[in-house]
Image (cartoon, rainbow, N blue to C red; front, side, top):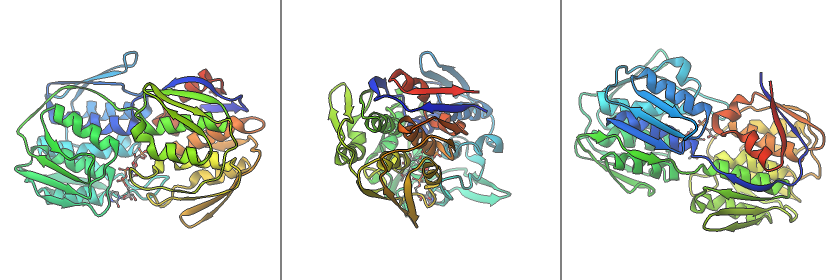
Length: 418
Ligand SMILES: CC(=O)N[C@H]1[C@@H](OP(=O)(O)OP(=O)(O)OC[C@H]2O[C@@H](n3ccc(=O)[nH]c3=O)[C@H](O)[C@@H]2O)O[C@H](CO)[C@@H](O)[C@@H]1O
Ligand SMILES: C=C(OP(=O)(O)O)C(=O)O
């Protein structure tokens, strides 16, 4: 099995281009199931999760051509031949469940394995299903699968008990052909929701209010393939900002939307990191002493749960005591045990982690327990004395495009070994 071997690195210097967003591209690829004709999606990140979504779409009858050199995927979705998703694909990636809304809307039926829990918590889909039912679908849950059937969907008002990103996306896609108007209230407002709505509208949908907590979808008869470019990955951007800061380096990020990074930039500045926003990107200078800060994860525009683990790496070597409260997922502290093996001083009390910053971390053998936990380990490894070996890096490859190459280009001593 492949591992990442990371040695203590000099301050990172140089420019890095941020890839297209994982959490935007996956729903967008699922949404292509709704259209007749061809779609071309640009700035596709080279991720394992995109490979899984490609296989899933191919299984459903979609022709997918992925040019990795151009970073483009071309999809022909004239004919959907299958409505059941195989367990071996869905179980690898939660975003697979996002094909349910489009299948229901386009062919009136879908059968998908329940995604179940994962390393970061239980991750239910009850809000997705509540939305489909409200639109008129019959939902059957048996033998670990969810089946949804509808001869016709009808627009209605749907209130989400929590502004779930996945539920907002799935219901928005299910509702595009529903008769009349659907209103999703207490909808998620993440930038990835706006990107999905923009793509759907380019294909002919009539969606208003994406990016606010009330999204209105007027049903249309048909969508047609289009071209679209995925927004930059705000979590990859945040991770590289921390890589610059933690190594006391100076890194310039290209292809970012500064607005999407507000909570991350604010917290980095509070830590005493210099962050300058320019028209071309963001410059991060980590030469000052890093100060402890408190963080609470929240839906956008709050501090993103996906940045919690990487930020904890920075706080592990900050001056003073920080507190991190995880409110979105109930079990997203799996990285703590591994960071402690490297010498971090962290105590967990229920949903809070209390971090006493230390001067030095020490490299050892550690395991990436999930995607962002893996990123957190790389960040600590860059400044740890001695060498760190990170195993289970398939988690990292799910969501970071060529991370070790991008870091090495900035001067990091990191290599992937078999
Ligand atoms: C609010 C939030 O930060 N969402 C993140 C979440 O989206 P993702 O779509 O995976 O998760 P949700 O936004 O749906 O979940 C947020 C919360 O809602 C609960 N829930 C969700 C659906 C449901 O049907 N029932 C239910 O109770 C979840 O248990 C969780 O506590 O992970 C993505 C990938 O890391 C991130 O990009 C999203 O920013
Ligand atoms: C947890 C994440 O992704 P997923 O929802 O695909 O597990 C993530 O992007 O940090």
